[in-house]
Structure formats: structure tokens, C-alpha cells
Image 1 (spheres, one colour):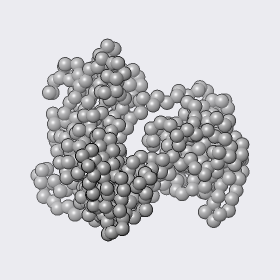
Image 2 (tube, rainbow, N blue to C red; image 1 turned 90 degrees about the vertical axis):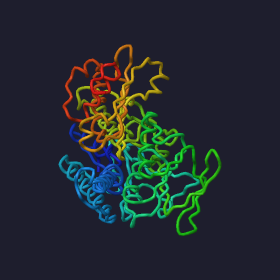
Image 3 (cartoon, one colour; image 1 turned 30 degrees about the vertical axis):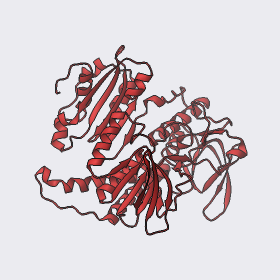
Image 4 (cartoon, rainbow, N blue to C red; image 1 turned 180 degrees about the horizontal axis):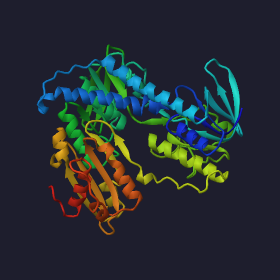
Length: 467
């Protein structure tokens, strides 16, 4: 079989790239070893949000009296897990529909680069077939990273996949790592009734976020009964007993933590092994495939996008990379009338869906100062928001950072109710090079959480009305 474009991997990078290729008139196929939609739709973004929604509803029921209601809440853990899997299955079936709609051939199996323009696909029954394509896009994604001293056995020391389908609710859990995956699962299991302890190697939780965000999340988590150890590392684990004993190194000495389960959430490793990179000579560096701004590798006709290349390991990044990659192929093949713009990795939004939610884009306050900017900072607490008060969710704030000289919007950092739905405003405004003046002259609806962005800008420029 011969194609114009062949994509290996059907996650949010791969399937989006395949659809765009088909739209541009390329004969397209996609190779997938497991389930359409990849990790994101089946074991990542989507099913975790379903779990987190169940946890949020349960917490609302538990606090029903604060809304003037009487209700009692009890979690059916198995049913919560079942609902999450149902949501994931529905999304995967949606990708199947999109493949048919766009006339994309789906080849189930494990794809390996064999030679120029050739991929060998090994099917589930062991049968092999060679598929030819002029352009091959690697979208092989990532997996839970394993630490040498924290090997995952899938039972007592687990990764995110096992965390989504545990057969029963553990009484206690140690979460190692406090990035998005770690704090989301910490929130979920704490809400379900598990005693949760977070162990973070760096000095603060969610360490890539603005320092004020880290402080607020730690305050809210501790208030909800989650124990947090920072500047700490798990040196070893003992799984010989009924549970797990973790030897944790702290600045003031070692401690032993005991729990039913340890969840390792220390990042993502790229899936670049065993896919034929060495055989065809594709360059890699530090566990990532080396690409140019249009995702071309050093080998003509071979491209790579998503978690297997440098950049933020985020679904929306992979999707945009896939589109840019394919549109550039289309431009070179005269199927697309202009060369696409390279992705600005400095304007990529990040969202964490715990409660309170976290959303951010651009420079943190510290990074802006280190870059030499004279800045104006505005911080608006959601306790002063009418919509947040009405929702009974006044925790958190919106923080904006502007360049004092030109009014450039350098960054936004939010923690609180529904803030993941708001960050796109900053992304678009920064893309359009909007200044603070233009935002303040645009009307934000009342009452909404979104008007807190305008309120924060007013604070930055000494024009606060509601504070």
C-alpha cells in the first residue's frame, strides 16, 4: 500500500495531522498500536477530567448545606471509574468516525521505520506488512516516566494508567511529583476519601507555575487535608508487606511514609524506542527527536510531532504541531497556498484541572524580572468576584503581568473556579499584541469570572474599581 502521508500514532497530534493531510488532498493513513485517540483520549486528558468532575460533584454534595440544600453524598468508586472509561470510549469512537469521514485508512499495529518511505507494521496476530509513504509523520507520544529507585510494578507502585482504573479505593496514597498529573490525582483521591501525601523534589508544588500560584494551591490542599512534603525525594520503597513503605529524604533527615499505594507522577518519557530511528538515521537528543520549526527531522520525508519532540508535552501543542507540519508539506507540494507560521512556544497555555483549577500563559513574575522587564503586576482575588461568591468558590485569584514601558501583556496566572476556560483570552490578546488599554476598553460581562481578568488589569494600572 502506498500513501502520500502516513502518520504513526493516533493521539491528538497524530489524528489531527492525518485529518489536515486529508483535507489538503493527500492520500492518508494512520498506524495505531492500541486505541484511536492515543493516551490523551483513552488514558490521559479526557478520562482524568471525567474522574475530576465526579470528585467535584461529590465535594459539592458534601457541602450542600452551604448552598441552603440538604443532601448526603457517598462515592461509588467502581461506578466513578466506569463512567470515566465510558467517556474515554465515546471519545475514541468519535476519532473512528472522523477517520471514516475524512477517508483516512486506519492500520492497526505497531509501526517501525524500515527504509526511505517504508514503515513495517506488526499486527496483533504477529503478521507484518510494509506500508509505503512519501511523507511519514511520527506521533508516537509519551508514557509515564520511571525513576530508577521507583520502579512501577502496576500494583503497589503505579503510574497514571493504573491510577485511573484501580479496582478499589485505597485508604492511603503517596503521590510522587506535583506537576499537573500529580496534583490532579492528589485532588481526586483526596476527594474520594483517600489519605494523600504529596512528595515533591523541588521547593514548591506545581513548580513550573508562578510562585503565587504554588503558594495558593499548597494552602488549599493543606486545608483539604492533603499532606505536602517539598524539597523531598523518595529514595527507596519497600513493597514486601501489605502496603508500601517509602524512604523519603528531606533536608532535616529521612522519614518513612507508609501507604497502600505509591503513584509515580514524575513526568513523561517519549516513546522513541523500537520505532526504527537508528535504522534510518533519525537524530535524537536527550530522549527527543530533533526537528526543525516545521517538524522535519534530519531525514527527508520523516517528521515528528508531539511528546516525542522538544517542547511542552501537551495535547493542544501536539495538535498544532501536526497542523503546522502538514500545512508545510502541503505548501512544498503546492497543495496549500502559503507557508504556515512557526509555533510560538512562549504563548502556549497550560491548564491543571484540580480544584481549584490552574491556568497560565506567558512569563511568570520572576521570569519577567529576570528577562529585564520593568513590570506592572495586578492581582485580583476571587473573594471580590460576584460570580465566584454566588458559586461558593471564592478561593484563588487572577494575576496579570504587563511591561510597564509599552503595555505589552507578558503573562497571566490564575487559580480558582473555572479559570481553565478563561486563559484563551490572554493567549489571543498576546497573539494580537494587545495592550492593557485595549482590554480595559473592551466590555467583560457581569457577573462572570472572566471580568476578574479586567479587574486584575485595573489593579496593575491603579484603576481598581472593585477592590
